[in-house]
Amino acid sequence: MRVVRKIRYVLKKKKKYILRTLDRLVQFIADVLYDRKTTLMARLVGNVLLPFSFIFTLIVKLRVWLYHKHYLYSQPLGCHVIVVGNITMGGTGKTPVAEYLAKLLLTMGRRPAIISRGYKSKGEPRYRKFWRWLTHAPDQAPKIVSDGKTVLLDSEHAGDEPYMLAKNLQGVPVVVDKDRVKAGRYAIKRLGADILILDDGYQYLRLRSTLRMALVDKSNPFGNHYLLPRGILREPLSHLDRASCILLTKSDGKQNILLEQKIRKVNHKAQIIECYHKPCYFVAHPKGTICPLEMLKGKKVAIFCAIASPEGFERFILSLGANIIYKKRYIDHHRFTNNELEWINERSQEADFLLTTEKDAVRIADNFQFTMPFFYMRVEVQFLQNEAWIRKILGQALD
Image 1 (cartoon, rainbow, N blue to C red):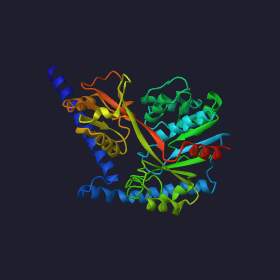
Image 2: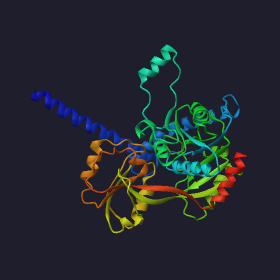
Image 3: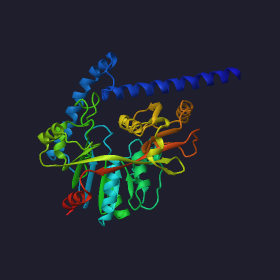
Image 4: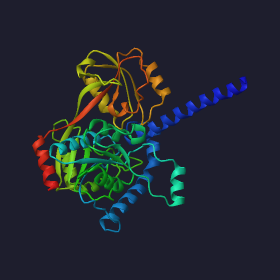
């Protein structure tokens, strides 16, 4: 028995070591993509990835060309579809924009529903998919994260963003499926939607859209201008020509003429709108108590997050007068294990507060107990232009 226990102990330690090593490797690759590291090793890895970036560029251009020439078809659903997306990997703030639009459409007397792929949500087991294929059974129905009244799925089964949207939007159904044409039909027929918001859908060309919004992070618009896997671009910059509206997010209010000229070279018709993501308050997890931003002034804090652009979150915490004594970054959408949370808890003992983002908080179980006060930051989008102008843009597109 001692030998068996010893073997189990060694295997458990090995597993933790392997998982930690893989996490470090993935984080290193992410740092190379965002050019956060300039070491010799980072440059070598970047050069190795460069040929694959050129191959990916050709594939992306071919796919868009096939849709443009109608060899592949976009399907209409008989209602207006607003696409919210970007041409870069994460970090532009799509979810707060989708939430803002849904709330605005409700005040305009519309019945919006949000359609999402549900990135990294828990899917149907492969054996069930195989059995359906073998027996010619009908496709699985889309996941209903919210019917507009009740949140029906957690973040693990819905995905981070759909769960956040469902939690924050009363009266707006949220539907998840990789086949967003199927999800859209379901939202219209079963949930009474008369307008669809396609979250993170700029690359989803199968669904015909009315208004296509491309979000560009003003603080880091296009990275190093390479496509994946060498850079952060999902599509070439020239593909911004599909956008009917371009949102410059994370705006500092200052005009960036060079960025606007770069956009106008590829799209001279789209309206350019600036917005910023305004931190509003902190929320105690899991109780939901709201606390003001000023509570951080002069306090020692520990922070962790798993988002595409953690620098903005960290800068804002510092701007509130806090002293960051510990920080930990994970790759975007990372699902925290209890061991990782305990690790963070141990290293945050001297902090007055432990902080994370709202998107990260939805992946932490309500029954996990930190030994210090734990909060997430609530963020909402604010447009530099007034709301009447945004209503006018929507009204013109949806007439």
